[in-house]
Every structure is written in structure tokens, then in C-alpha cells.
Length: 112
Image (cartoon, rainbow, N blue to C red):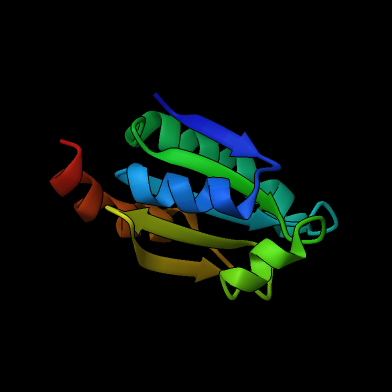
């Protein structure tokens, strides 16, 4: 089942990376129109095709230390983690088919 977290600490995020097989970190800003329009599409993709993937939202403006730790300097930025390792980083103009393709193979190997 898709679960999401928001407004969490760096330590909590690092813990989730270590223990969660499939994780998506979604860096956003409420002043970013693409961030707002992309969010429901990402949620739908994950709930429809990748229900075991964990989703964590990080507001880059409210938590700049976390964004800086992960080297995120633009919004939206999506970081895909599988088995504790960063698999792919998608930023700015993220297309849902691109995200789907990035998740598909490693997810199938780990979860299915």
C-alpha cells in the first residue's frame, strides 16, 4: 500500500532510505506550479502501478538543510531509491512516462 510522509527530519529520511526497499523522495515548493500539478499524477502512478513504493514529500523552502544534504537545487526533484541506493534523479520537467520507466524494472526485480 502506498504511504506518504511529509515534514520529516533528515534522520527519519535516512532511516527510511535504509529500511524501505522502494522509496521516492519528492522535493517541492508550494510556489512551484509544476510541483503542484505533478503531485497528483505521481500519487496516481504509484497507487496504480507501484503500491509498495513509499513516498516522502520534502518542502525545499521549509527544509533547505534536507534539500542541501541531497544536492537538490531545483523543484520539483524526485529521487528514486531501491534497496538503500539512489537509483535515479529526475528534476524540473518530469514526465510521468519517464518516471514510470525509471521505476518499472527495479521495482519488478525487488517487489514482484
